[in-house]
Image (cartoon, rainbow, N blue to C red; front, side):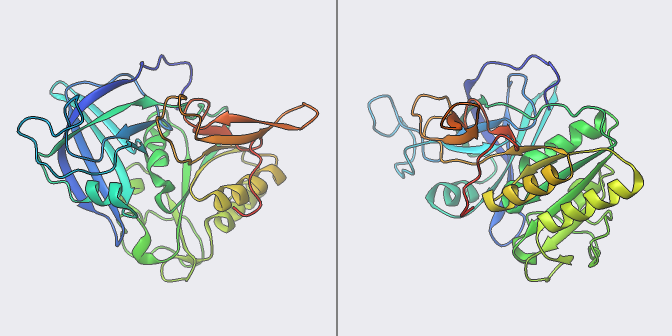
Length: 309
């Protein structure tokens, strides 16, 4: 959440694993410890090396294991960042879907790697809205967790929406049974400790509301309208989900910021691989912006979402 705060320049930092905890069938919470890290804000990300260290000649570093992994770093939104006199801890949440995330999921306490960051454009601080809706689909949870912490520290009222295909793919610690009718409750540990009520949705109805995250967002918008409360929304997740959330917010006259995901080769705007189409006033009606430098957070109303999601 950026409200004019000075963000630090990116750098490469050596990190050591301090915790690696499975969250569900495919997701894990990985915590890195490092000596220092530049000022950063929710919505920013890091690029993590997902292989064993190599020397400058392309071979294994002296004393390093010979097993190698993916050559390119992988981007991960910062899910949490804590500073203390002893150093910094950074949380990321990953979903095991390929060799890079498989490598990270198997790291043990004491293992080391390095990361590049902080990168990207963070969420803007909300205006005078009475309620902030934080809508996450699947592994879209990480940037919204850290955003919720910052918003609550600033005294803002929040309600979270967390969706997944099924209960065993929900990357959160569930407390009791979420309300099946879609009523916000303190059912998610990560949000409950911040005082944020949560609506859980699953596509198959195996936990919480049977439906999708945009359905719950629409219900929150309708409830806020009935109560005369102003709203701002923040979303992260699959593109089809964010498009649906953006459409519902636009129909309600509510501003929505979306953290967009793209494949990123460098994370710094050099490779030009992570383009996002945004609308403009040109004869063509749109242009490309880079997710890694001009995003990953965009005003959702500017994004030209792909029809296929």
